[in-house]
Image (tube, rainbow, N blue to C red):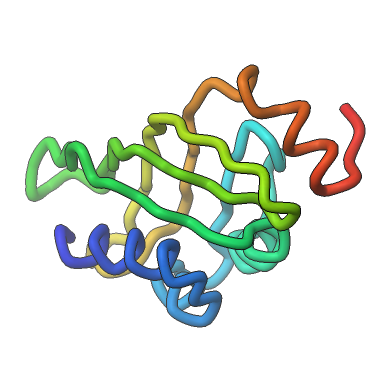
Length: 128
């Protein structure tokens, strides 16, 4: 499970769409404060299209027990949008794992969007 989490952050940092998609089970979903609920496959294609650079710094991994199917990553995210605007914030990604604990089935992303929402909407030509 720890390596799965490290692989996730590495794929984000490298902008590797195939690598990040490979970490998710078929039919997996992502719930994001900016993008809403999306199939994981679609979410990452959209995220990477809106991103020119990602740089994550792992702060904590929370895994309650071997029997648990949930794990949370706490990290600092320096997100550079496609237009070059940068935003830095702490976030927590809460993953639900498959029974084998080898793939992510659901991701809920938690962070305060207020400081970056206007830049995000302007960069991606979205409106609230």
